[in-house]
Image (cartoon, rainbow, N blue to C red; front, top):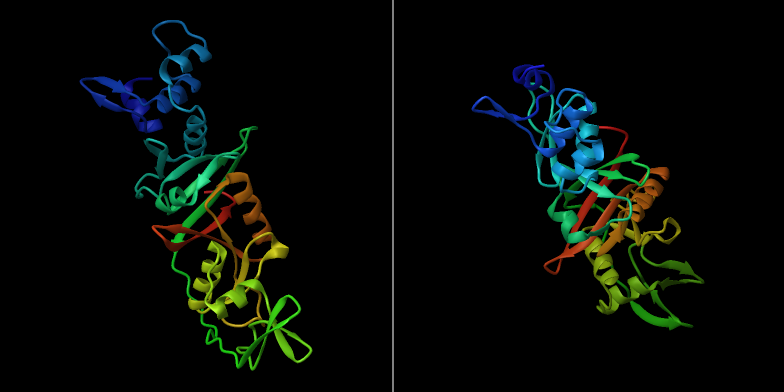
Length: 274
């Protein structure tokens, strides 16, 4: 197979002065296809050691995209793919199952498709988008009187209906609700709670789902739209676990984090394929 045939069929490499220049991923791919051979006799491990100095997992991303018939372009740890006549998509980025991911890195690299590769080389796809979530609930929280009931704060004349829990004629408040009323943002979670309320969401505990909060955009008569987790850095397998759980209860996963002191949000979901 000559250079023109390789380019036309496999859409790999660039020609300069009648020489085909290949990226390492392209080289291994064509070698595995039996379309090129090294000048010196080499075993596969020797070839990889000679030409591939990057993380070998990057090749799994490249070969997975090529196996679907895409034209693939690599830019560092990012891959862009398209079909003939189409435009390149948002980047595909390699993630390993135990890799520690910072929220700042996640936010800065979104939108993207994250291709998670586990130790068995099994691939799972996730799509992430930066969003500015807005609700439409009554967030005009007010109380007539704040007191204590045992170790809990309680309120009378408290509204709206979703705020607090009814108990013997008063409403007891959880720590996020009472800190919000008292204006005491003691933790990052307090700041997240306050931000979601100010975005006009109904905010309730996400404990039973293993996340910080569940939020409703309008009314609790419907299912909560999102489960929200505050993230600084986390192993990817834990992010995957949260997404799977959210999907199983028909909710979306919203990851929140601080960028330059301001809360930002990433909507992330699992894809069956790309």
